[in-house]
Image (cartoon, rainbow, N blue to C red; front, side):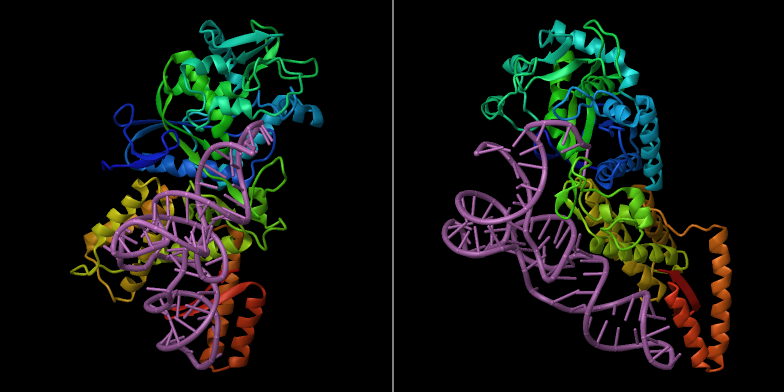
Length: 487
RNA sequence: GGCGUCAUGGCCGAGUGGCUAGGCAGGGCUCUGCAAAAGCUCGUACAGCGGUUCGAAUCCGCUUGACGCCUCCA
């Protein structure tokens, strides 16, 4: 069970052997969504990477506390003092909490379709206002923040005197200052690099809470510091999120945690890379995105047909989580075929007979699967090994290779564990009333066609086959009879 | 402008100082009444130019291009 797991730490830019803070336990925090609109596929990719990582730690036998927050306050829009939730609420004339509820529900629904495991704790920013206020007080006491006009800002320059602001993003605060764009002169900040811990609420701002500094709302970066500390402790194992959060969000988290607790909060920083479409980052703000729901229905100009959630998942797992992945119709179409082949092959595995001896080396194949995952969660290499398994299954079922019953047992369970438990794929062939009816109908036609073929009535048999093809039902003639699949 | 990442065969996408990634597409073969499906099999790529080395696609430098962050973003 005990594996040497190496992961790429963004803090050091190196692959490091994973050593938990507490033996046998893993504390993992991942920055969740700001629930002011539907999650798009790019958002999903990051969460999916960490879902896979969570699954792998669980598989290795760790006790994992996985915290993924919901940001339901405090995330400012650009160039304004309004946060995203409040803005949306104002525009749609809804309570902020209606917005939060709506998009949180959407988020959960979508993740469920993608077969995500729920996190251990899913805390919200609004549920931790008190803790955030306390953290601000601590930072003020430590002399690393200042109050101006009812807002409190983190004093980055002061912090940088003793600590290194930029330790994660490899930036130099001095450089940052030199390259700062012209100020509009409106800011209360001493320095443009300073960031809000608490913002005074303007009259039109709907989400507001009392604080020692007046009525306002917490800054975005603070919630993650407070909630990760509360549930995982002052130092925990893994903090994850999208690459785009590295700066400033995660940098600010480190600074805040240092300012509160005087220690580096996170041992391993993991950053998932972006999903692009047409070569450009998917982002809500630019409109270059695709919604998961559109993948499931096929209703998006960038795709030619609908895809199962598991196909999208397989598509993403075929790329490494730290690589940029470009979404395109051709790429997903190709992934779908590979996915189907994998699933059909695993289905076939149940029929493989064991033998007196083994002609294949199952244990070294299994070790290779683990090696791939232990090398910074290399799912594309794992999948390559699974396809070697597919080849084996075909050869085994043709009797060209053999396995003893114990080897077959190990082989079979390893294929399934990695495919379903770790990659989180599902076999999409679900049965319902309609598919049962269709099944009966098509099987009837298959029987009629067989009769026609036995009579050498090619005209009729070909007609049945071709007409079904036109309807998107493909007949597959095999040695054991005819089956069909839907296109 | 600053910082950083990446450039792999028709497409997607791993990895490595010398030994086949894998998937999709394509060719060949098997199967089939003919097909399709399925299976087996083939393919020798690593942006350009220099350098280090016995040997580099893999290390170093430069050039070109793309992307990301620097302002909200997973």
